[in-house]
Length: 115
Image: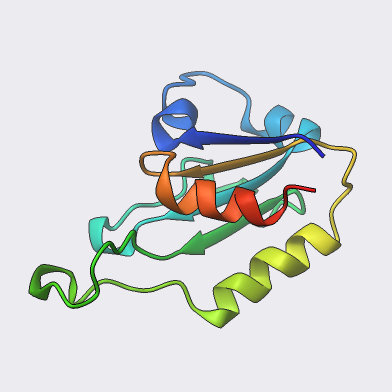
């Protein structure tokens, strides 16, 4: 399975792009930041598409940092959602993963699925 990690801006910059076409060609994991009140960069009617899984958790560098105390950590339910999504996905279809910067969270999730 091919895995690509992107920043959120990759999807946001596709003005006039066809989200439905992307979701037909790829499996997509959309990691959104609750502390920034991010919404997935896909049209609302596609949020339940079978090739898209949307999760919400913050990028937390230091849980002891008072400025990050209200951040939402990745939960075991988030991890289970992602694993179940991948188990039910067509693994011949490439996987696209995005988070805000396309570094920490999306990279960590992608790393789990590398053969």
